Length: 112
Length: 117
Image 1 (cartoon, each protein chain N blue to C red):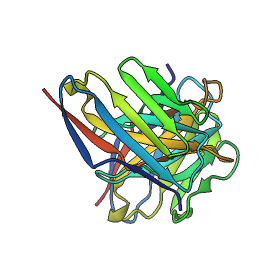
Image 2 (image 1 turned 180 degrees about the vertical axis):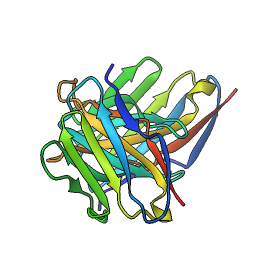
Image 3 (image 1 turned 60 degrees about the horizontal axis):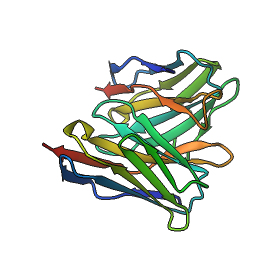
Image 4 (image 1 turned 90 degrees about the horizontal axis):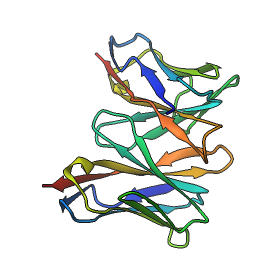
């Protein structure tokens, strides 16, 4: 069955450092992969989309890589700030129905 | 920008009653909407895909008679939890695809907290 796993339940880093979050998947060939931010009690907010034929995408302090051979995406936040603290979700999409399937999520805590 | 609105944001209902949650796309027409549920500290689990003018497609393990989905217009989908039980208490989130948006633009609502007592 399809499985999407994200690294460690919680990631604690110091302000100013780069946070790296991992998304691994099995039994799936997504056409694209998305990253979302979710704050407690709120709906997810879209951050970045990367397609299967793209290796890397950047947006301000965010960078996403996509390796379809390794079946892995890495999400980087450079110069992290306490305001970046949230749960980050990866989601895979594509296929006939084009539905979005979410990973388990990683809780990021940036310490001042 | 595009916005998806959910209503109510919080609802408490008695066990055995039904409750309806609305999902609206405010400034675009959504031919496809999705319904998710999320338990505390867990990820979003897709329940069903709602297609305007046709029956919803439910994910495996989701009871279609319990979670009724109606997508009667291009801007509105509703989820009705019938004969609710305490185990149905959860955070329900909808999303809508903007067909005119770049790539596969999907917008999420703010979610609806359902508590069944």
